[in-house]
Length: 326
Image (cartoon, rainbow, N blue to C red; front, side):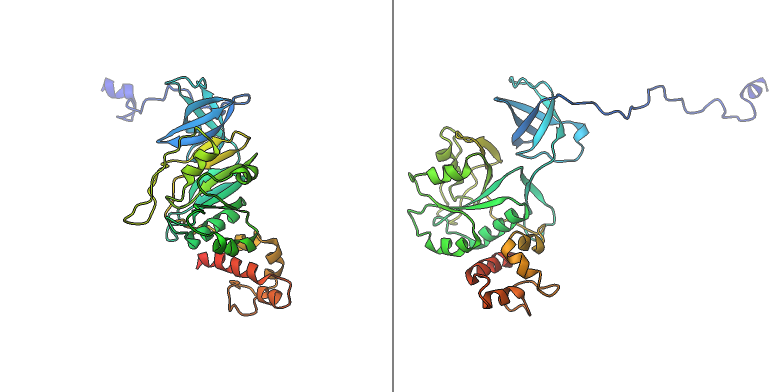
């Protein structure tokens, strides 16, 4: 009876859950003002190699970043050991707002977007004129992704010693895209001129010679190269991850792994039309829902061609590129 009296009327009164003795978590975030910033130059299995001044620092992504991805080209704030010595490890604690972001999906049935490179100024589509043969559908899709990301496209035609570039030049010149042709041992001065001072990402089908081109542009970069398969006529993957490489004359090139498909399910048709200022003013006069393709009823683009306001070759090139959505 005495025991019951000590506990009071409630038999379980002395068996409450123990009170937490830990201090409440603070809502204040660490202040990284004054912490060094660096550029992510490659990503490999959860490790980020960042260029801080002239030092390459290996870092992990801090929990404070959350689920936000970190990709090549990102400008990041580092905390921890930024010495770059072997075995040292820093943390990425902030990611600066991106000026541009190039994305793709695995295919058009895949709604998941895969970021490729951040903060690029230009996208150079590298395609061989032979071995492997050019794929205009692939070129068109990459152009669509470039215009959607507001990144200036460039078309680089390699292996011009094996086939004529005339047909591809005629197909893409009306779009106003700069076109450079190269072959082994060719003068790369025009290419250096267009790349200097810019961050340019190289994208193309496997085996088109991207790594060979990178090695010629930046002697000593030692990007692995491989021959095209005699059995399939397709290139083998040689670059396994994107890598940003500084150019001797200023600027960056970002070599990316070869792709065999380039999905654009994340792109809206309107963003492509908006990339062509001379077409936009006419497209705005089209009926709602107009897809701007040949035969579209009352398409104002056809009217602009009929009365001489729009170059028919430019419209044909635009429509071929836009068919990548269909």
